[in-house]
Length: 183
Image (cartoon, rainbow, N blue to C red; front, side, top):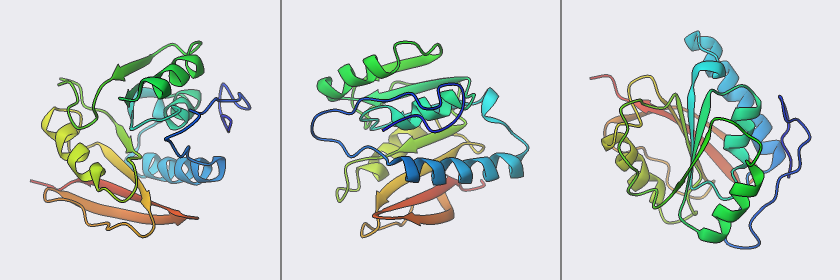
């Protein structure tokens, strides 16, 4: 596993020994190509955005966002072993903030994220609960792009208050691109 583009291109990343499924390099490339299309359509760049990597595991997706110019990234993880790996992976990265705690109970914020990426354990629909919690705590507003990585067999119905913008399969995974519904 490595950073595939940007400032830290080629940097090897560690992964926790157990309990996570790191997003593959190929899936990350597809993901960031789709993010770039969304950024272009909305007239934005990664440079000014806050990126949240929720259920982060190794931190690979948030680190990729930072490598590509994201202003800051928050990494949400509750597993202590995974957090140790993330600390090692981001030790040289300015603008990264680790949040050790439950993604279902994020701390409140006054500044919403530009992009929230969630890669919850498959088959449990934890992403729905986390999405609602992040929304309630101020991390998501009408301009936030929410990306959910799920197993292609998992249900993909967004909760009330969110609309599905796009769905993209990549191997075993499916990426759901969501935004809050217009009021």
